[in-house]
Length: 273
Image (cartoon, rainbow, N blue to C red; front, side, top):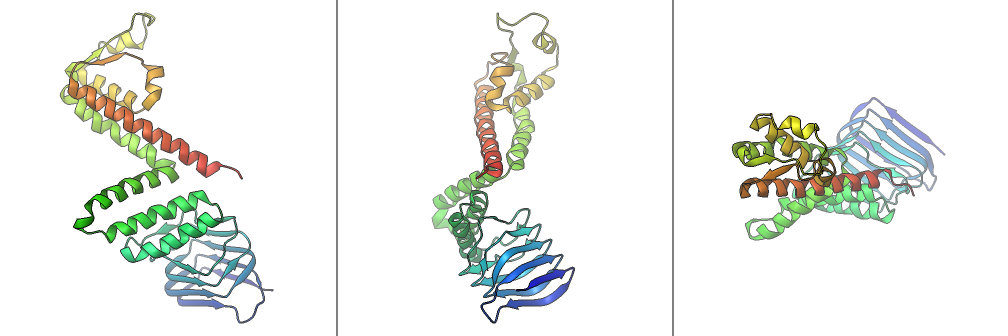
């Protein structure tokens, strides 16, 4: 049995290959930068494989059996890695690692990783590599595939939102100024309305005295809450312009979808078992 540790080294090429059927206890790599090719072949790692803050240019794993926890942490892959005839342990992750290749040739390697993550029921990583596969496939589509390109783009966005906790929040926040600008131009058509069952001296009475651009900011901010808006301010704003009404409903629908993706991403990330 053997334990291999590589820490803070810079090499042109790296090759780790087993010449017998003996298993390695573990391979631990930290801060390793490989300028050209990294080749791992016929390895049977029974304990753990950890690559932390490593940089790979071309990485190829061939006939490797990862029988223990396998983690690529904050590592960078310039080109899509290949894992040919490899098996993974159920506790496998590429957490915080970046995959920079968006070329069409990366579609196959990303599909390979997607299928391998599916085989160990790792839904988070499977969804991640599915989005990378779609991203690479889009590079192979021409003008005659415009419809497939649109569908692929839509699927890519849904996949990214479904695995990221922060991305839906960024998009929700970005929509606030966008729809504020839409409402600001015709904000005079937004009426502050207090329903009959609203108690007196509430915040609704106070915002009646605001100027119209502050009202537009609040209107867009509340719409960004999606369905939660109806619990906070039901029927407070009345849009008399069809343009504002359309923009408001569109923001509500988009925000509701993004909140759903956020909850879905949290569920996937922290689901146990």
